[in-house]
Amino acid sequence: MREAPPTVEDVRAFWEAQPLWTGESRHAPGSPEFFAEHTRVIVEDGFAGRLDPRVFPRPGNREAVLDLGCGPGFWTVELARLGCGRVVGADLAENALALARRRCEIDGVVAEFSRQNAERLDFANASFSHVNCQGVIHHTPDTAACVREIARVLRPGGTASVSVYYRNFLLRWWPVLRPAGVVLARMGAGLKGRGRETLFVEKDADEIVRLYDGRANPVGKSYSRREFVALLAPHFVVEETFLHFFPGRALPFRLPPAAHRLLDRRAGFLIYAILTKR
Ligand SMILES: C[S@@+](CC[C@H](N)C(=O)[O-])C[C@H]1O[C@@H](n2cnc3c(N)ncnc32)[C@H](O)[C@@H]1O
Image (tube, rainbow, N blue to C red):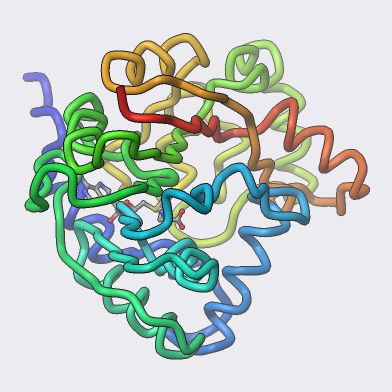
């Protein structure tokens, strides 16, 4: 018998049990050290050392900002620090919201929090000037519904910054590249915690994407640039797309910074889109 497809409740249960960065961190979840380490890893592995200013809302779109799928609050804090008028962090998982709330307290910034399903948001039409949604909608069964909802809660002229897993050339060519992955695994490559130690020997590239967030992660999808733009285009003008995120920490050696920057831009595992509501 075929297994039933994963539901939003399965997704919630997973992230409730394993909020982002728990399981990998050396520090107690919610401690200042936990957040400092997470920030360092996002900057280093997410952006090869420097956050990309294109991800943030333009000055005219900062009055009411939703950080959708806020997880442990990295972007919520950054948006509040930027001086956005009202910042709302929303997530399916209470434990993620608790971490994000704690991170804001530690960093001395103000944000509101709300438990929400991105596929069916409770917010009224046109509630926000900008939606930030990084690494979220590829984790939920109905990704197209999330895109529709992001557009609905934006005011006319509203903007969004959205990222999903990108099927980069490493994933596209994985059947050919896997022997190199096996060698790297023997040298110690892999991510620690959450059952991800075998990442580099997986046969199925789609499994690598799902496994990146943990063996029990119910949903993880990757997109080509064309597929991502097709998903967004019914609701948004796609102003720009670009890549970032090369998890150098999974390698058994330290990447030279220039090589890391090149891989981040050319072989990033996340594709970002900068959007204006149609
Ligand atoms: C990989 S984490 C990303 C967290 C954060 N955006 C970041 O970039 O650090 C994915 C987050 O999306 C949340 N999520 C997954 N599906 C969701 C949904 N349908 N509605 C709201 N949040 C969801 C999870 O609970 C989790 O906190």
